[in-house]
Image 1 (cartoon, helix red, strand yellow):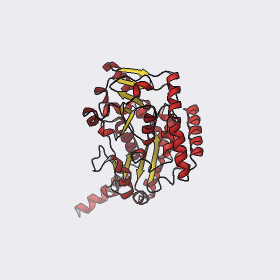
Image 2 (image 1 turned 120 degrees about the vertical axis):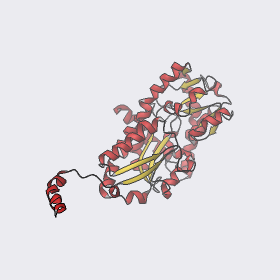
Image 3 (image 1 turned 45 degrees about the vertical axis):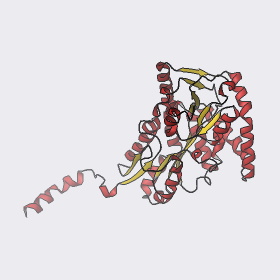
Image 4 (image 1 turned 90 degrees about the horizontal axis):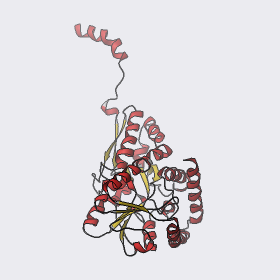
Amino acid sequence: MLLRRSLLAAGPALLATPIVARAQDVTTLRMHHFLPAVSNVHRFFLVPWTEKIQRESNGRLRIQIFPAMQLGGAPPQLFDQARDGVADIIWTLPGNTPGRFPRIEVFELPFVAHKKALVNCLAIDEFARTELREEFREVQPLCIWGHGEGLIHARRQVNTMEDLQGMKLRFPTRQTGEALRALGAAPVGMPVPQIPEAMSQGVIDGAVVPWEVVPSVRLQEMVKFHTEIPGSPTLYIATFIIAMNKPKYDGLPADLRAVLDANSGPVAARMAAVPWDERGPIVEADVRRRGNTVTEITEAEKARWQAATKPVVDNWLAQSRERGIDGAALLEKARALVAKHSAAA
């Protein structure tokens, strides 16, 4: 009787207490990617993005991040891990599987993309809504974007095309590899995590990566020279995708799916620009303080590079026609979107 009276007396207080999500009400998704947890993308994009989703779902939707391929496999397998449900969500480069996603390659062609990541992120996001649905139909894309300027990091200084002759440089995507070959370098394709071992074994003389990734592989300790390309368009960028397993996405409660949708597309794309546009200059300043040499090729030299790499663009257009893709229209649209968002950024 005493217990019953106590419960009745506590009734109003219990009703006034905020309801906390029970463990069985929480949905936890596993996100897999290829860089270590110290990387700038992990710290300044993926973590804030997942925290925002958890906060806006009142703790009911949580994303647990597994960096550095902790769930197994190799970086080129990440897309299929999302498709097959090995991971619920992945972050990867479409360029890790050359030729598989031909339409998004238009932004990876030499001298198409902008120097600033925000411009590329917004341009690619808008492009993806109409042009990439078929390309990524096997998954649920949450964000498709591209980084800012990529530059050359090498053991010897690069000021001209002649300096690149025979230089073994790591490249991220098929089109960047072709551009480097057109400039006289000896391109070597590999995912970012393989750079340190390849450098130590003399497999490569340097790498093309944006500033933000440099500290995650300690590239500034392995090379002394860093070469930037002036202005926009820039030499190259790589594109990225955060993709989700479709059955897992479709199986989410409607309100949680709405939270995820509200943090996808342009919202996520704007957040994705932060590691490159905000952290990149910090990395560059640190590299300069270290005593490394940072140079920029001249505008006249850039014009030489653009002329030398034009056949790469022409070849991609020809390959697109062979695959039944109107590459010329895609290229025109990509350039128009870069110009549009450049004016607005």
